[in-house]
Length: 148
Image 1 (cartoon, rainbow, N blue to C red):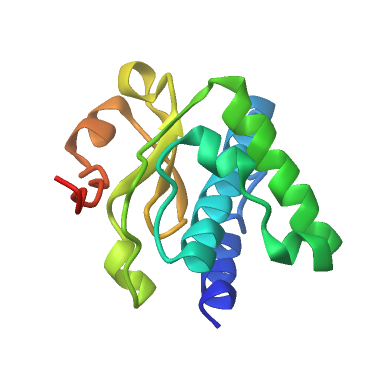
Image 2: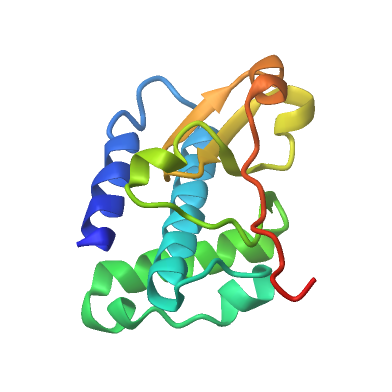
């Protein structure tokens, strides 16, 4: 049920793709959507967020084996993460209900701090922001390490 709610939220943010946007913007939105979905699926399956890109890249989503579309998304998130074009905030505890995750940036294209661009919020919503909006928007915070 949690995965379904996340899918609805993420797909809803994808609804207006192509509305006058460049190919680069569309690809960036797709990549960030794939990364956010993989992050959420990892969190849902493991009960915690991934610690780093290597951990998320190594993760095999059980749902990817059962639905072909999920395998495509998992492959997309791998390519996006390996490209080095995206900054992801690791170890972020995702909260329930999903609304508690809104308004905080989870991932973004590496050029966003200087030029503005596409971001993924902690709730999976994808948006385009200016450099100034990016600076003002809160960033997701990693959960405290219980070992420390």
